[in-house]
Amino acid sequence: MSSKERFGIEFLLSDDEIYLDSATIGKLPVSSLQTMNEFYTSKGGGVTKGTHNTSIQASNYLEIQRDELSKILGIKSSQLSFLPSRETALVNALFSLDISNDNNVITSVLEDHSILAPLIRMSNYTGSTIKYLDLSEEIYLFDSLQNKITSKTSAVVLSAQTLGIGVSRDWGSIAKICKDLNVPFILDISYAIGHQPFNFDNISPDLVVSSGSIGALGPQGTAFQIIATEIDKRLEPILVGSGAIVSLEKNQYSLLTNSNKYEPGVLNIAGIAGMVNSLILLNGVGFEKIKKHEMNLREMLFREIKNISQIELMTEDNLVFGPILSFFCEEIEAHDISIILEDLGKIHVRSGALCAHLFMNEIKRDSILQISTHLYNTKEEIKAFNEILHSIMDEI
Image (cartoon, rainbow, N blue to C red):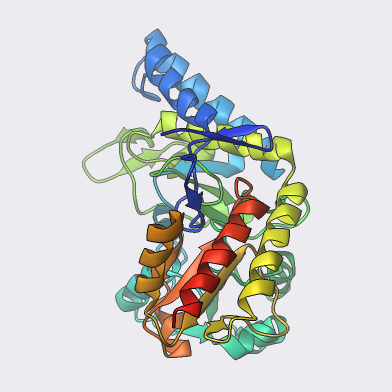
């Protein structure tokens, strides 16, 4: 595969490829792949797997990655844990909050499966209730939350940016509401990290989770969590083993302290290093600069698509959107449009239910198309997309 340079970063992108599906998997910077390869060729050890030099080097290298990412996010390194997936972090948290059958957890129909499936699993196990915010309640989100939260609410679980139509939420205000009402707030930043600035120094949710392979532009099989000191005292991870264990007897075990206790098994240190390298590169460009670039691309898309009579854009007044735009056409199936776009212009977009079935049920559709950009996309690519989409619709 060839590469392209964007904002001084070299990406693994073919010369003729227009990749508009970053909300599924982000494209990896070339130097992040090199960072991963360097770990295996020059280090390659396992964390806490011995006193020999290879193991010690690996352990030190992991802590360097933890320190680097902590600086970007404005947190203490003791708050940051690396995991294989955000689902792992959510399951650990949800099954540690002492949620009982008379409690409830609040989330939204706009969330994707990676949030909702762990919530449903927890609800089925504990007998607790899930309260869903619907699309209309998102417009008045803060009032809706205050009306829904009661003394029986065990947690609020929401994302900074939703997958289905890319609603961007004011997570700081949500965190303040939850703090004022003494309810734990779990925030997923998978679709927003890498696209906008995050700093959890002054105000923070109780738990922040993120995939490493979406907006963060790291490799698949990487994720991280940020945990507030107060809730850390309450959480006992349900997924345990290997390097997180200090000692073990027949009927009990002891975990490492601080963030390490949430890191079971053998960590993908090379992948973590690749993810951290990507975020260092993005931070070097500037998250505000990235955000401005992507919103300009979204405006180009929105301005053209809204004038195509056969297409209906998925948008709502009084909601704020990030670099995700979704739409459908009554005359042509979403998957067919996606295939035609690839055939005519090697343009990659996502089609289907987008791992957001509750939202699809809300709008009464089986499938839609989604365009999601990142800093490696250009105005020329968006122009090419708009032209080909117009030509497809002109054939109807």
